[in-house]
Length: 530
Image (cartoon, rainbow, N blue to C red):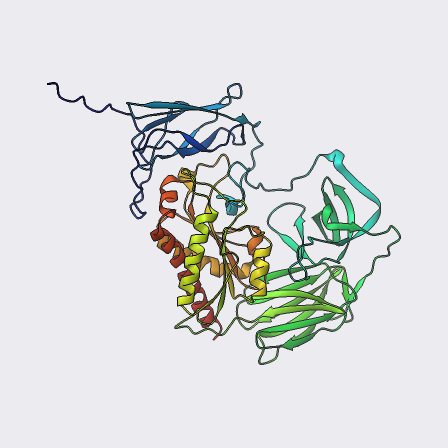
């Protein structure tokens, strides 16, 4: 009797950068079946020369090639390929999986975009978050201008009132976003009802002048044009007054109409700029804060066609809110809460935002981002309650919640911090095998320290590459009333990280990282207030 034939030798690519700190990837030996998660059929590939392809083959012992390139397969059958783009005259990926005894093939047709111009990525967007699904090109530096023939210069110059989105019932949560003409991350968050001078329109945008030195870009859909006979009003700010309360200090500025404004944050200081506004005083005016308030002093001074108010604080900037009243602007500066350094979360309200739906990234074996984000969010909620915190959840089910509703929910709960939970992906042209890891995002400067502490704790818990603290313009972290951060704990599109994310163990580690980061932040805030 002849001995059994040896198993066929299958050529397999080694798995890159095996991380022993992650839960082991389970071994799957099912029938071969190629499932490509990305790119979808006929997708327009927008990378310059190479791109990723990922999905699963159903068997962790299989060998795999994508357009002839040997591609690693993880024990659960998931794969991640980084391959040259197919030629424009044959835009397809030919995928072949084999165990030696069985072979399956799949052709995935795609489209190839024309090569984009070379524009370097800004430093803080080198690893974009998954607010954009894979395949959307990363943000670039500089303004995105429409063709010149779409530019309409207005003569005479017209005025418009900002209307903004209609989903919010109050001025506090309903703002119109303005963008810098030259690109970048600077934003203006203006109150509906503010009147601006419209200089020209460019496609779907309008360029509006706030004063002689500041022009910004606003969506035309956020404007309602006023009659050509409208006469502009030069705003005049009356003498401001300070009103101190236990949780905040108000600076009340008499005004006849809503001003276009900008808030700047620096360590221990806030500045409020009112554009196209004059004051009743020619010389700077300084008012000392009350002994009980968080405000050390307030100063107003003319600055060209604007007025700048500078607020020196008795500690770090923590939160603020511009509020329009019938006869003026109330600028509310939030005082950090009283904190027990031995139990820094006790009595605080923390907003936990499990990222997505309705959108979200999908992993190689089909794990959809909103599912583990909710699992981590619910575990974070439980751990926070164990620490004595109150928790405001933006969702506890798989129902969709609009992006702009999430920070509004946190503000209405008077939360002391906001954390949004996500899993990462990258756009076309970025190799996820090389850039994967943990990152934490913030937008406002007063959220930076919280982002640092959460990032430090997540890296320690999740044992992934430290991709750092980054600043980006994500809608959920633009709220100003509390420090707000967005965590991208792991890369859902990487096979080993997707497998880890499925496990309760790793979900627990993610949640503990968030809670530890919050504890460290509030403990340090308690020391800073002394």
